Image (cartoon, rainbow, N blue to C red; front, side, top):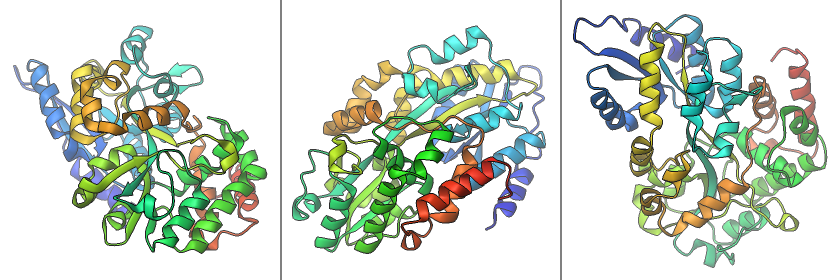
Length: 402
């Protein structure tokens, strides 16, 4: 189905969206979020806890991030009935720049950010202003099945390099799958090669065209030559769980994915791969979801819903039900997280601390367009690809047409 068809279907599905509640009836708060069915219980709990003030109604967002971006911007610009938006952290600055989000007072900002991890707050801070509530924020890790690491000759208790991982997978005839987007992968490789934990958009584009980009390109070419996978794919988890699956790189919450249920008993976690052995540290891409308040007729009620969804009880339920990591530090250190992650807690905590944050910029989608145009498929990546992608990103950022 095309993005346009998805947008039309979504608008048609939410066209009625009546807000006017009769006397004594709860207001309807429309919550737009991907994988909406996973949050049905949470929506019911907050609705019940409101004491009849509101009822959270879930609105399904497209699964594909690019389609989700187009769909959301279209909905907001046409005045669709959305009150609370589950916003990818990569989109926070772009959506904030539209002026379609409600302004948050200093007191509201304090309430929504107090006790949150610094990285998750930074991800929703645009030019010094917090524009959304931190909700989930997680790193990517390296999943492996059973004795795959041992058979491949790898020490999975410490970070391994991408090149050794590709070679190890090829050695045992297993696959190395990559979940997430090509942009996340390339961004992590480039920034990881610099040794930094964050670069702004301009610095990232410059690094892409320099030595760090060369290092990233070398990793991708080695991966492609090893013939162990097709690169970033929405089917990565399912391919990993299929016969021959050995390694999978993706968000830590994938361990609760239905696709991995058949191999859950042999599933293990290791640190995100390194670009080179000389770096000495694993740098995982970080990303998450914020809850944004739109300019609607019931901002106060919608803000009550956001407060409930981001409170400690809801954050604990979120971990237990979906595996997504909370942004409240008290919940990160809770028994719920310890039970959800088991022996992998330390790996995940270190990945959060050492991870690579996304640039907070309304133009981040232009970098995505440049990378997807030049780094896909992985078999087409050449020595000049990093420089080409940097030039293409700069052209788009300078006003060129996509």
